[in-house]
Image: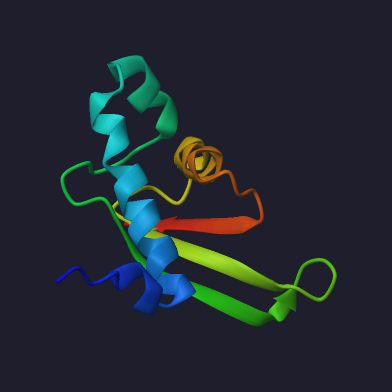
Length: 98
């Protein structure tokens, strides 16, 4: 019997899963592309959580969505942009931490 697990996942968990799938993709990229993404520990890189911060309203009273990625430098803005582009969502804040 087929069970559609995505239907039962919360939007935050589904987004976290999508981000983790995206984080697997740079391994196939050329070295020069990976270098531009920033200082990253590729072996342990992963999205550890997605949260909605209702206190930080951005536009039209929409809460801010924040994804936390561990094992990357907080200055890895190339990685932040890479994830947003692959998601096709530029309204998400990406926070990276070691």
